[in-house]
Length: 456
Image (tube, rainbow, N blue to C red):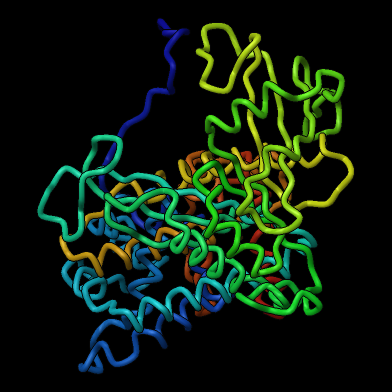
């Protein structure tokens, strides 16, 4: 008997008559999380009255299942079939036309209620995770579409065509707030930036929200809030709005002729070593404070911190770079004496790009509807899907998976096979004992009651 010793798989016989199995046991866990965070009940209340027939699908349940599908990697409503064809795990799942109608029924009032549901879920999750400090990162992105039939799709400044969502991410858990905008909306629209900041602040526990409303008295502040943005946030209206909310801001400063002169006039003896997140010196980088660079219109207490660094090989220098150094300027009202630490903290804003990439991998890259309101609802479900994934990561006990991207989470935890068994009027999922992440899934299930018990 000859044996093919280098075959990459075991030889098997394949049939299509299996029963009692699922390949979405982890996605079922997301549904449990949605239930414990109050998402399912909240969306059902928001969509109450959308169905006149008593036999019709609960629209909140439909929207929750769409969010679960997006968290699992779905890209369009047709991907609901991955849940629909496993009723032993997910129960009744609406048809594509029913889901489509549910999305079309989301008006301004329902959209506001969806935002409130997500905010409440975030508050519960932050309390569960015992996070004692948060940072808000603001950024805009572009979503190109292939069709010009989508309402409010417009040409973008990068030559594409589509939409320009504005987002704000609550770190360290990556919990998003956001709004869909036409493609011709600008990245430095302070009104939109402040709107998503307010939405993110509204998702924080009351002790953190205190004193951070527009025009609040500074004496009401109980927790320090830091808001970071790139140069699109370095506008007069944005900084004035942040100062009026009593937050610490850290934003990039745009180049200008005045700034170029100011950088070249910096005393060479004032430079000191820059540091990384761990406080260790950053190789080839230096920082200094340059009061002369603070714009006259900036709020009282604004500082300008400059970092210069040798560019990587092949990088081109810009207008205010000279003597072989690349310069970046941060405008901040942080009064810390350690300017190197302040600048290093600002550099952490770069993480928002990865967060946005993950949102695009969770449905934001496709806006499947022609109607603008339906696409706004889709974006809200994308943001909700990101919250469900973040909640799952907090329930497990694995340092790698807690910071993993959605694609990794799906491979290890969501798309996991299990046997379905019904015994004593209860449905059981029997996970593969040999699967490396089965222990983590079991830990997550055991932690669910604690998630539900957390006070929002």
